[in-house]
Amino acid sequence: MIAETPKPPYYAVIFTSLRTDGDNGYGDMAKEMEELAKEQPGYLGVQSARDGLGITVSYWESPEAIKNWKSNEHHRFAQRKGREKWYEKYKVRICKVERDYGF
Amino acid sequence: MIAETPKPPYYAVIFTSLRTDGDNGYGDMAKEMEELAKEQPGYLGVQSARDGLGITVSYWESPEAIKNWKSNEHHRFAQRKGREKWYEKYKVRICKVERDYGF
View (spheres, rainbow over the protein chains, first blue to last red):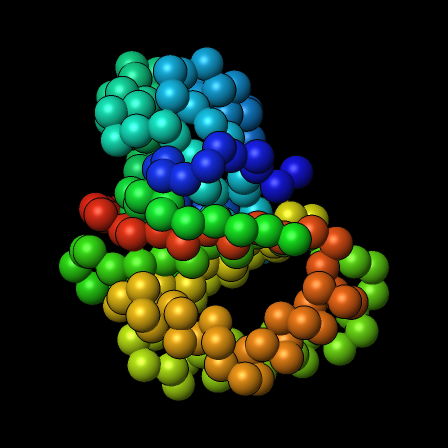
């Protein structure tokens, strides 16, 4: 369940969000976007948790892979619906992972 | 509830974990460490979510601030207890936040 990623450097997108009330089709779209992300070039993994605040971190080989996914047509549609219906507020942070270690 | 951070670049520590069963003093220590982190030089913010998988992201001004917090004596004690009792598994990723945007 903890994403397996290669030796750094690689890239991470930290997506932090507060949802609006109700599902309104969000769950289905979230699942669809997770499946679609996995098919993108340069995709390395994703992990999510929500208890009030939601944090999703996706991992990518390069900034180009992130840009490519951001501009994917289906993903752009989902982003627009997100702003219109599903999210009260969100923040996206694009990061370079410089080091990692685990236990 | 979404951490307010300054204009990039700044740094993020993504801590992903799977907990062992039971609390065993974890909740109190987590609260204590969050308070202590806030007092450290270069601390910018933190956000956490857990539903099975836990994701905590803390934000820092510099890699030095992260190193300083990692080697804090009370934090090192908590890290050791974490490996002994509270965590089944964890992964730490040190990142440079290059861009961010929100809604």
